[in-house]
Image (cartoon, rainbow, N blue to C red; front, side, top):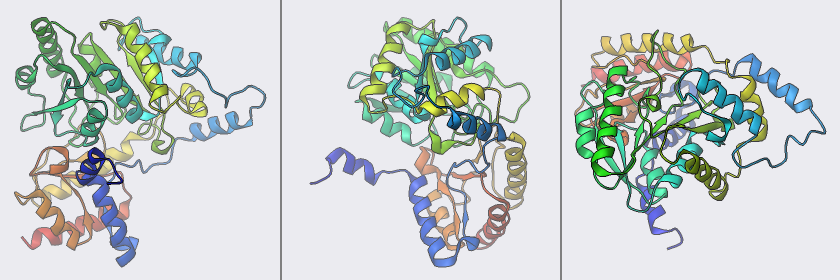
Length: 393
């Protein structure tokens, strides 16, 4: 067999998101882009803010400073220091210094170096279902074992279920809030209870459990007083961030991992992140993007653009008979599938050239995911096409 058995098996379970995207490309070839309504990919639709292009232009004109050479594998020291100062000033990680920040190739790169640093073969990582499907592959990449805990009917964390799932080999818990695919922003009270449960479990099993807060949607929130990142509520925590969504630069792959200075072994973990950043082949985050985002810490796309689309689609889907909860963040909706078999419903929608992602792909059958990071044509045509799908039930 040319391809490793493990990779071959993983490919057969590959992301439903990509599978549906590829199906969409086929439909576009057959029917034309104007007749296909694709809600599959969480691909930022907006252009980056004007300040981003101004910054890139200025950096591109600089000469003789060695900006494009290797730098320390953790990133430019001045960039790391600026991010640490910001996180400390926001009371996310008080006392954080630049040595506790590692610049990464997006949040995906950050998740992989964090898991590589923390996991021994056979260590367990808890994820909260529904969850971003790539987590399973990230954990498997580094010898870990994925352990799934269901969230509640309204997609909040079931703290008791998390506590019950923790065992001697539990090493980490991944918390993604606001959540992909549900858009659920976990409440402060939930995160406080979760932090308490993790601390109690650490005392019981005798070793740290690291909360990895995967926060690429932190700026895409539609409530006025959101809680801080989940990493704030547990001492043994890491914060993984990406500018992919806040600046609409998903193709430019820039993010960071910050280690809570209160964490057990914080200095050693930061060293491990730096080492794995190099040895997993990332080497370092893109130099120009590191320098750019440092100047854009207060910049963001127009979140109201997404809020308007959320509100419109929530109202339209409810009118069509979908049962759904309005998300507090991200650019996803996760309604209950009108058919108990979510894959069957997705296939029915394909007949009207509407592309959705089944909840099965996120560990929660019976639901479907729509990304509303799309243009008005897709929303208009998609609503009309879904009305036809629902009319044929």
